Length: 395
Figure 1 (cartoon, rainbow, N blue to C red):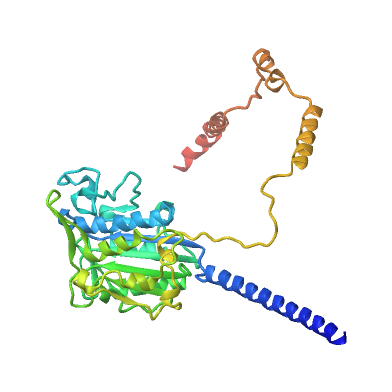
Figure 2 (cartoon, rainbow, N blue to C red; figure 1 turned 180 degrees about the vertical axis):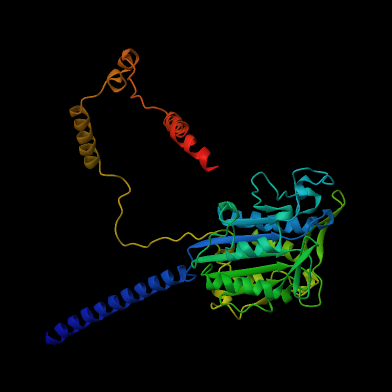
């Protein structure tokens, strides 16, 4: 009997320990999931998309930028958080056989210009100075909000650039260029001024890897379409339009992004592999030594999407309002309205009284010129009577 009693107590204690261990395990899993959900530490996303090339034969650079613009908008970044800079307006170019369109796929399958493109800097507004001013926030006070990068220390920023470049520089408009040192210093200013949390830099140009060699600011991840000494090649020639529609690297990146949705768990390591040399011909590069997190823990949507943070609560939230509370509130408001005496329209606006009342007489004040003229007359009379008679003996 005593043995059975001890056995029963032991089984109860064992069950209690099992329940406690399962409860602590579930709590730790919830904490891990919560930490994983908020691991990036950012609360908002921004994108700066820059095409630096003019002229019709650079059609593909505009299509590159508009394609990235289309992808980030589809994944949730609104126009208010996108700064779009296009050095030329290919949609309105007289050589365009399909006006008001820019295609990124052959046979004119996909129009990336669309009906809702908001270009913030266009044509000759796309300069090195304006680009650096956007990044650093050193812009005139009269600049409209749509042309500002209003980021903060909780912002994840995507910066995409495309155009013609070389070893350590990227050309703007075929008239000026930005160097990798200037770009690195601009990012350092952004970090010092707390203008970003994490920054993803992507560049599609010849010798693109040279543009991130001088970066030294923390929390920057960089990708390039080609290594130093390599060209970044075009893709998708279209005989009807007469030019190449996109660059190879951006084409395969966008093919990869088309499979992404706002809830995707795809990470940055997958993005590094989207365009091997067998497809791009050039050798894409990336740099992650300045980035604090492991790329495999960085979601694609941390930069290409818009965050949707939620607050986890254990409290029960009633979605259907209590009918009794609503009825009592309605009765109280109805009684308050009855107690108030409604004003008639005529009492609120007594038009008849306004029409028949006599105009109020204004107090008369002499004009300022009258007083001045009176004083001038007195002085003239004085000198004429007294002063002139005595002054003639002096002269």
